[in-house]
Image 1 (tube, rainbow, N blue to C red):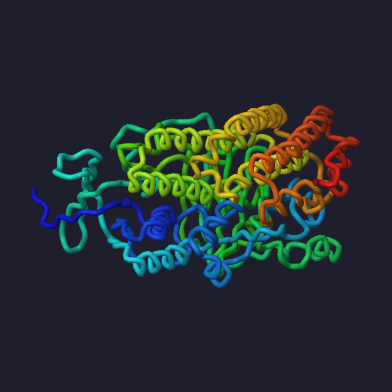
Image 2: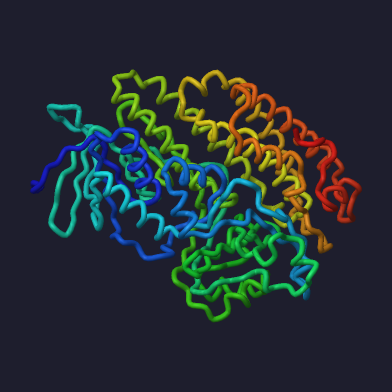
Length: 535
C-alpha cells in the first residue's frame, strides 16, 4: 500500500522517552540547523509516575541532565534531591535501629535526584518542540529500513501510522531509542545475551512511604543530618539473593521493586500483586505494612531482564541508545548514565560526519569504549546477588564500586573526555589497567557471594561520609581541574589501588559470623586508615 506522506530529515529518532528526547535536545543545541523528528508510540503529555524503571539517578546521569541538557532548575523545582544509596541488612527486628545500615550521614557534594519520568519527559518534549524538533506522538512504527534506494544520502526509512494516516519518514541518520521494543536490534539481528541472570518485580503505589517513621530512637535519627531525610534515599532492603528498592517521587507516589537472582526468584514464586505482598510480609514486613492498602498504579514482572547488543554505533549512520541497546541491572541506577554515554557518542559522530570528517575510526573507538563500560558495569552484578544480604561484603563492595565509579569513570565524564575522540585515545593504557583491577576485585566479591551469608544484626551504621577517599573523589569532580587529565587519572588510580589493597586485606580475613578486627574497623566509624587523608 502506498503511503500518503513523504518527508525528509537529517535525523530520525524512534522513541520519545528520556533517551530520545535527550538526544534530540543535545543535537539541536550542538547543530541548530539539523532537521530532527522524534517518533513516539505513547501520547503527550504523559501521566506522572509512568510505568518505567529509571527514576533514580547517580552522579553521571544527574550531571548529564543538569549540565548537558540544561535541566538543573527543572530538577531542583520539580523533583526530589536524593540522599544517596542506603542499604538495611539483617533479619527484621522489633526495633528497626537494630538492623545494620550502610549509607552516608550527609549528602556528598554532587546533587543527584529521584525523578518522575512523566514530568521530566513532558518538560523535555516542550523544550525540543521549542527548539524546532518535530515530535510525532501516538504513532505506530509499521516498517523500518536502514538502507533504501534514494537519489540522496537520505537512505533510512520509517513508515508510521498516526490518527491522520500513514506516512514515510526518510532520514540521513536513524537512531533507535524505543526501549525494549528493540527496533534496530530486531531489524539487524543484533540481540545478544549476557551471563548475568536476574529478575525483577516492580510497581508504584499511591502513597508516600517515609522510612524515617519506622524507628523512634533519637540516636538512630541523629545518625543522619539533617534528620528525617532517610526517605529521600534510594533505600534498599536486602537479603541473600535479593534486594527491595523504595524510591519516592515528588508526586507523592512511591516506586517499589523486588529484584532477585534465579535462586531467590524461584523460591519466591511471585506472579501478581497478592503474591508480591505475601512475600514482602514474610521477608520485609515493615515495607509490606507501609504499603498497606495503598492502590497499585501498575505491576510488572520481568524475568532475565539483563541483555547485550552486538553493535550500538555504525558509520553507516545508524545508532542505538538507552534500553534499545544494552541493559545491565537496576542496582546503582545506571540507566541514565548509559543514556548519557550513548547520546554523547552519537552526538559526537553526527557532528563529525556533518563537518565532513571520516568517522569510521571514531565509530569503532566509541563502540569499544561503551562496550568496555558495559562489561565493567555488568561485572558489578554477575554472580554477586547471593552476597547482597552480607553487610561485610556489601560494605566493602560499595566502598570499591564508589571509588572506581567516582575516581575513574565519573572523572572522565565530568571532564568531557569520554566523547572527545582526541582526549580519550591516549588514556587507553591506563583505562585498561583500571578495568583489569576492577575485574580482579569483582571476582573476590563473587567468591564471597557464593556463601549467601546474612550476618546477625548488630545495629551498626557504616557511614560512607566518613571515608576520606570518597570525600576526595567527590570533591575533585566538583572542582575545576588543577592538573592535565592524564595526571588526574593517574593520581586517582593511585588512590583506587589503595582501596583495592584494603578490600583484598579485609576479604582475605575470610571472617566467620563473629566480627573480626577488620570488620570492627569497617563497621565502627568506617575509617580505613590505610587510605590516609584521601589526598
